[in-house]
Image 1 (tube, rainbow, N blue to C red):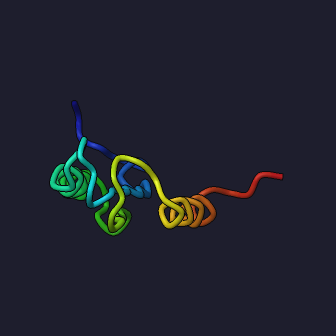
Image 2: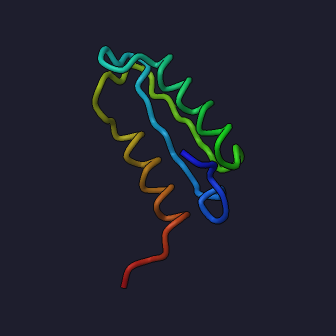
Length: 77
């Protein structure tokens, strides 16, 4: 596939991962975020880990997702 260019190179990305995920090890999340940072503006890539979280979600993660959406998407009337 071709390189990422234009507006897509500036897209904001939030990647979340539990540090106890038995299905997708944290190492794979770390490798993925480094690959993303090599493809798009690394300043726009945020990687959050959650202590004790398995292959699921938690309140802290959902709050981070809400803050990310509020910051990057226009409000819906």
